[in-house]
Image 1: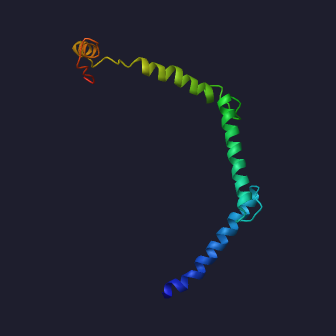
Image 2: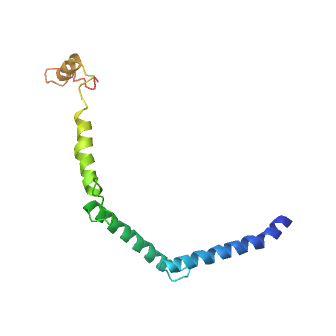
Image 3: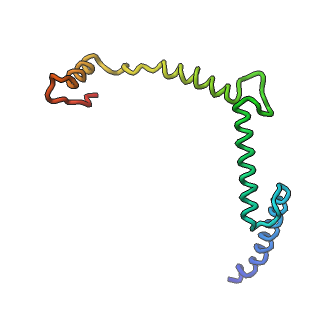
Length: 123
């Protein structure tokens, strides 16, 4: 109990100094300086999110500030990965690799009109 009573003033002063530091930092970023003004904080956060989205869209469109001319970036990189890497990976998959001819015949027979049982889900 005495330990808490002795350390509490130090903790309070540290919290106060940290709060003042962050309020100063917030005001430098464009806030009003009030740590409890939620409307201004919401506006600041919305501004940062909007700027991030605008920058991200610009990078995808190829209008980013750091356009690399030696390799694909942004939307061109996404297009390359989708059309080349992903397409080649999908084309290399053989869907009938582990399916036997007898399994295919059984499925076709079970799904035909001639089979009154119509048993499915053989695989």
